[in-house]
Image (cartoon, rainbow over all chains, first blue to last red; front, side, top):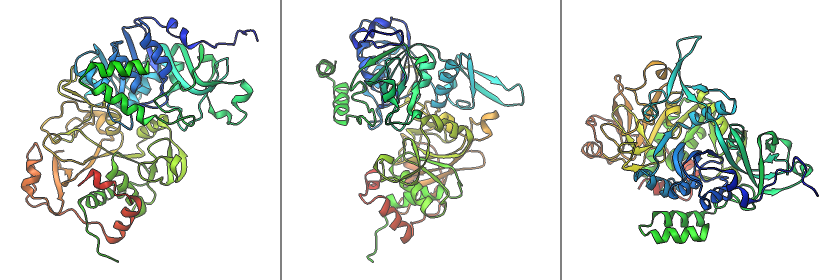
Length: 274
Length: 249
């Protein structure tokens, strides 16, 4: 069949060609859950660098930090969930290898994404007041309510050049479907970005999307998706319920290699993984 | 029935349960094994209206097996994915018991990093939801291994807002409750300083002071209560594998 204007399928190998050094890249998922690892690997294999990464961080952040790809990181946490800390991320921070960070409260992070998605310059939130988040982000301003005496943190809108997200299914036009228990914030990432690259376990026909699942599972409409990549296992070793859970053994191997004093252990892991 | 030995872990679970007494119909957020059992005990005894989470995307009428999600069992009663958690936080209908890598005398809590945050000596998980929790609803803390490295004079990064920092509109919903540790239960005095509420049976006041990096007065502290036989039965049923003993020896 010929490609129609709504066929947005893109081979995995062409993903890096859509990215440039210096871009602000949003990465969907949460901790070590439904991370677009196949897309992240394409960044790792490319010479793209100097990135601003915006994510509820997991091994995506750890791998990009270890590879020296991150100039600025905007995050609420970096965790592997079943293993609390990502040693690649902690090591990069402790060695000063991430030049700039914006560490936000998780709710502030979502407020920033919502503002970005709505093309607003900020969204007010109570979270952050009184905490060192204000000191860690000296550019953060508070805003006074025009209606009463309340004061809020004005979280700046997070606008993204590109968002990378991974879902269970999509059609070729980019209508994305999640089948697990939690959508995380992947639709917001897509809406806050100029370009969204969606990878999925499987590309199916539009009819098939709702053949066995209710329409409420259609999380990301095609108007917010520019490219669809079929990447079975594309979230491995993070979870992509119900298609597969987190590969705990693999994650342990990742942590062991990242923690090792010997750089060759990491190189060996990288070669095996990438 | 044979006589059960009452362990330190069981005393901690009962103290967590007591912390949720009277919380009402709110979402209980419990980080750690002892807090997870404690909120189940609270719901099974004095606060049945408490809403429990499966730690993932559901509010549970019947909780799943300990440390498991709804996928492993139990009865979901509402869908609360991460996106609605922050709305629930902002609504105030939540009560958290969080962990802490550092806590200071005003109840400031740190889970972000140790040392200067610009280039930390030790990078931890990040502030997560602590800033938002502490300006929106009741927050308690759970410390499984009480030490002077955790109870410090000043935290390096105030993730959770302490009593001295809760000023202006941030103070409106600020509500620090208790700190339950493997040695004692703390609360706050009228000036917002951490004070001893009770000391666990078998812990000497000197031992507690030594493990706390700021001055406390435990000389006249009452003993933390022991769980009742009925409570012990519930605790055992919720944690048949004894996971609580891995957290508290």
